[in-house]
Image 1: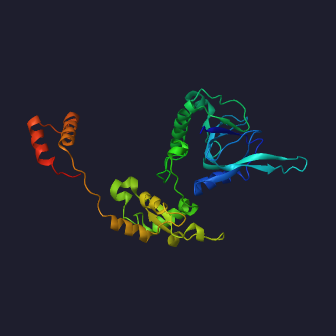
Image 2: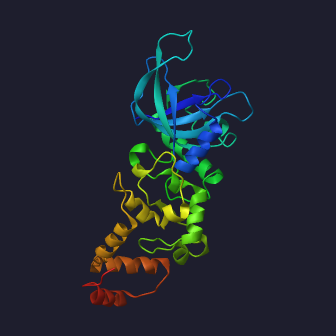
Length: 313
C-alpha cells in the first residue's frame, strides 16, 4: 500500500485544537487522532501510511513534520458553514509522531535525498509517494528525528516512519505509562530494576543504563473512569521492555506482575545448542583470522574432537 503525503498550510488550515497540544499528546500518549478532508473522488483505505508536510510562506517553514496512519474508512462529514450544502469525505489520521513547529525536516534536504518528488509543489491534501522513493524518505526522516528529537527518548520502539507499517507489530501502551513525569516519580520511589524478572540496565550496561526502565500501569485501562487521576507510586511499576511488552500481549487485560513472575519462574532455562565439529572449526578459524588467538591446525583438530561432541552454548 503506497504511502501518501498530506499537505498542511498552518496559514489557511487549522487543527481541531492547538497544534502544540497535539504534539504534547503524541509525546505523552503515543498518538493523536485528527480528521482530514479528502479531495473529491479520493479514497484511502484504513492502514494507509501518511506523512505530514507543513507548508506556508515563512522562511524554512516547508518540510516533513509528522507521520501517521489512517484508521477506519472515510466518512461523509456535513459542512458546518450554514451557507454550504452537502457533505465531504473525511478520513481519520492517527499521528504517531509530530515534531514541534520549527523542527521539521526541511524540503531543501528532502530535495537532495529524494529528488523524484517536487517538494515545493503546492498541495492541500493527499498525493502518493513513488514506491521506489519511500526508502530515501524514511532514511532522511529517521536520521533527522533521531539526531534532533529522539536521541534521549526513553524508549526501545523504532522511530515512527523508519519502517513500513506492515513490518511493525504495535503493542498497546496507555498514556499513563508514557507520561515522563509519572515515570520519573515511579522509578525514583521503586527503583529501575524490573519487578518481574529483576533485570537492571545499570548493572548490565553501567552508567548509561542508570535510571532507565519502562513502567507498567497496574490498573487495566478498561477499569479507569474519565476522572481518574494517576498515583505514580501506587499505580505504576517498573518493568524492563521485554516484560512490559509481554504484559501487553494479552488484551484487553494485560498480564499482572505476579503472572509475569510466575511465567519467568516456570520457564526455567532454555536448552543449550549442540555445537558440531564444523561449527567449532569455523569459530576457531574466525578467531585466528581476527588475530584474537593463534592456533595450529593440529591444535584446532584436538580441540574440536574434545568439545564438538556435546558442548552446549
